View 1 (cartoon, rainbow, N blue to C red):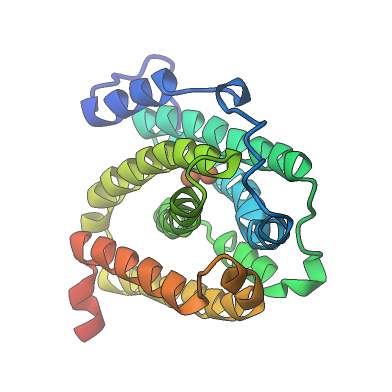
View 2: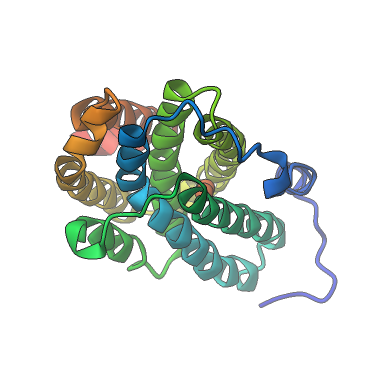
Length: 252
Ligand SMILES: [Fe+2]
Ligand SMILES: [Fe+2]
């Protein structure tokens, strides 16, 4: 149920919402001309490697728009306010990558070459409850963060690095939201429902391992490897799992 005049007392989410509003930015803040130092071979590899991130931004748009009504109709107005700003962030990320492909003059991989990308998308969008949604969105934000972080580090003074660095600031805010929301909600869940979150994590990682294999050639072109990528992402995810108190469940 939604209220005409809700109380809006949850300062943590309200602060995050204000931050979300004040941190909005447009594509005019990126120097799209910074492509000179990118050799053609790296551009082609980037085109391939960005493919799952590109779809992931649209998955994130779908994720936010699916979870928002669940949260709002359960009377959690403050998190719903924040999610509205997050939807705009994901739309911007998608739009920017669309533009980046045109600026670099390369193409994403055809869908049939990355079937796992669709499997990941489908697994994430299976859920009907807000907590698994937010947990899935968190893992996907960490996935995006690992990619954007790697691009920012490898191509610092190019359009790719600048765009990645700017996008990472949005992703950090999304993680702050997941942190708060999950910390609030997890204590209300039973052990079986919490274990389901770890099943979701394991399923997503299994899919990402296969995805990594398909992208190995493009990663090697950028002095990267699926193993290094997944190890970094796994460590990051494990830190969150521990922090959220989900770790003891694996031993239970
Ligand atoms: Fe994003
Ligand atoms: Fe995100």
